[in-house]
Image: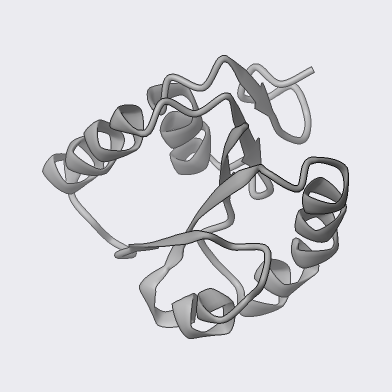
Length: 112
């Protein structure tokens, strides 16, 4: 299973996602987890045992950078996108990733 995790901002919020990642890896040990977070916070996850690939996001990126990131994510053929932030940007990245399943919070961005 190829999983995309999204939490771009707030180092505390990023840390709060780690129990979910541990639970995911416990249930699906072969899951490959790619995590997208603000590049300033990437050192927090760089050595985390549940994150296989870390993709730094640059806050304040323009449309061209967002489209480049979406294209990069789409190439990875994700089975699942976990949007821990549920912002407009993370919802766009989750949808653009092409993941066959997307999970987030609230109904604002099309999540159940």
